[in-house]
Image (tube, rainbow, N blue to C red; front, side, top):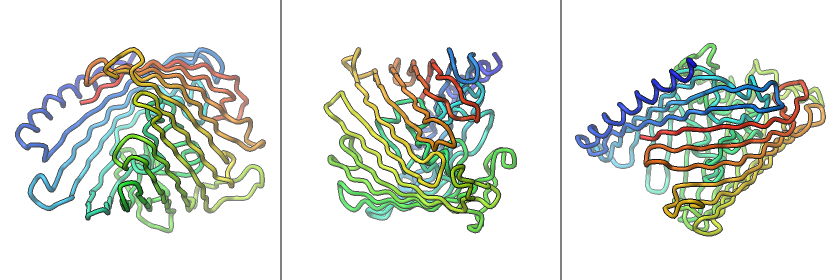
Length: 378
């Protein structure tokens, strides 16, 4: 009940912010942009996993952007401050036991700084410096983002094996993007590879920039059939290298060797079959780890019950491949339906079936999980 009260309070706060942002826009003509979102998940584990039960969790995000060009200062400059509050239960940790994490907003109870960066565009090159989310630029799929399971954002070969700057804990970095042509772009980034955890850094305002304490390097190439900024056929391929934190003690269970560094590869594809039907696939490989591989795929159909395209029906699968020493592969099937009730409000019922939840040492029974997400966007 206390989590529902907190979620309701967050909704009221964001509605108030929306009214303020509309007033600010009329005065500053989008030099400053204030936006807010809220996601609330009602989650029930019907059977299997750690235990049956229900819980509620929520995530509130507040974005403040400043456009230097619209302010008449200089061309191509942009600042972003992004704060977040996560609250409520932890269904994967306490009910399901899956390591791919059924809800992509599960993070515990924290109020923290999520992004703080400056971006500058020079012709066809863009540089971003500051506190960043890796998934905003790398290993992302437009079609897969319509699903709720965390692996359809950043798959487990990255999130389960290295301390990457992804939700909920980001870290400082430098990102460079080169749009070589209308169809080809190249990106590379270096991030602080050992973020300070919430226990010692509760608001994510403490950042150690000592490169000897770990770095993460990511490079990705992208080819688009229809233009980088348009929906359509997009293929991405990337590689990452991570220098492990001195205190992490990452050990391969098959060989018993401590891993002082790590690496991996990934491939992401989005394909628009027609105006309503789209598909995606994700591949990941990190051969030195217990979670050595990942395969994800799915499809989405827009406008099944709405001629205006206000609803999306999707089906997807995420397979986290594990060594024999770690256990059986964890495979999640997700069936999702999202309907846009108003321009600011959407509802998303979701059903997931998790085969061999592998987030804890004990072998767990297959889990059937139901979620209902309420989303607000201002």
